[in-house]
Image (tube, rainbow, N blue to C red; front, side, top):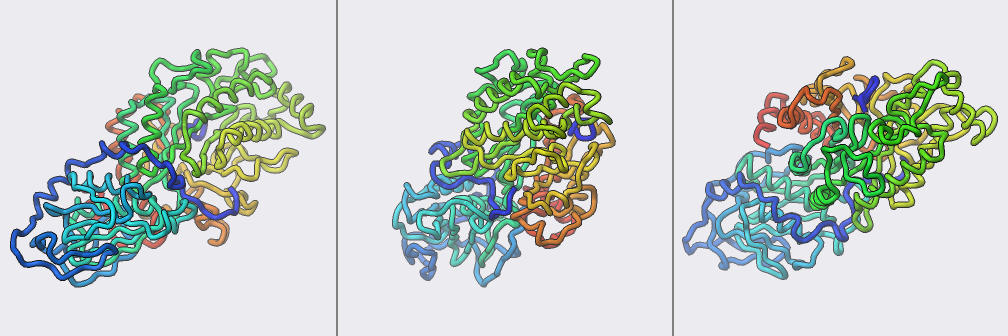
Length: 566
């Protein structure tokens, strides 16, 4: 959306975006994920050939006093240096753990366990360590990976993303109730090796504060290559961000291949095979892809091929980008696309299915007198919903109907932009629809406190801090990591002040998290490489503030320096 004329749920338990463990990824999806830079860490550590051995350790599986020589590297000192910072570290006496020559990744539960893919990924990240399966002895230098629940469990709240890391007697244990927790642990290990060579002796207890942590990419105004998108998915996964919203349709372009309506597709687009690969990759990295097909506004690329469906005002003038929601053919067209892409953006078995309906900046509702400007819509509203119904009711009903379409396709976690929710009226927005709150600057924009008092779930996309709008139009300024780090919290939903409700209404169950948004209003203002550089520190600051509700321990200067390493 281009906010200020172009944006450039419920009370149930909070849920992170990661799907439940069953069928999480294709077996080979991890194979290309090794980070060559980490391989150099192995060269900095050594493995002694001396005959002396370590005393037995206790890491779950049996520890061997003689199966491998004792590593003789220098102790790892200081607290782990990661982004986000771990929430609790209890230091102990000892040398800690480093990835040494001869080390292995050990999975006592075997190759068919729920963490086999995470184990393979970690082994690749650490320079290609071997993975051993079954009831294996844990030797000095080894990494043990284990689920603490029976075969793991579905991810239903932030406790299911929790993990424990224990470095003891030169051995390392990763333990968690779910594969999502194990994945988070592997990201901590990867970062700690990069910044400090390994993990210090002691125990890490860690979990996120907010279950939904993500990045939004406007791929409609400015097309990006599949390779660039893949790099961003890998980047956010390494930071423990777990959502990627793809805005692929707008006035300037429709960027995914379509079989139901090939006529609407822009020349520069992603193929369905490319999208499948990106979704598979994201799933393998515990990142949920959230498609956004915006309607009833921002449909210019679609309407360019279907001008008969374009909204017209009382003078017969076409309104760019707005579809005529009084025309039944409009719903049929958009539903065709929703069904097609719901099938393309697959959801792992047992996982929540996310979808973003858009709903913002419908131009019939941005004029001073909608009924006078668009009498056809006003008439249709009363015909459908009775005397007293307005165009706002018709627009609300449109989104409700589209939500039914995606719900029938398995999407149970549906969002729309906050300016698509209206006060009063005869038609209420579906009670399960999450408010994606981006601005208070639009005509009739409601305070986020209203939504929270109604009992709705509100996702934070505050355009004051979290909108990276190319070219900085409409008074937008590129957000900085420092400003997010110093000023923003999940409670700051609008403007620069916390929302005016109690903290009991802004916990993880009501404000489940935030996404940083890239909007490409002036598409040529930056190259993809410049964008990647520009969002680097804002993403790192964002995840720190979503992971731990406490004031960050590091100064901004120290955090920025650490961000340069991660």
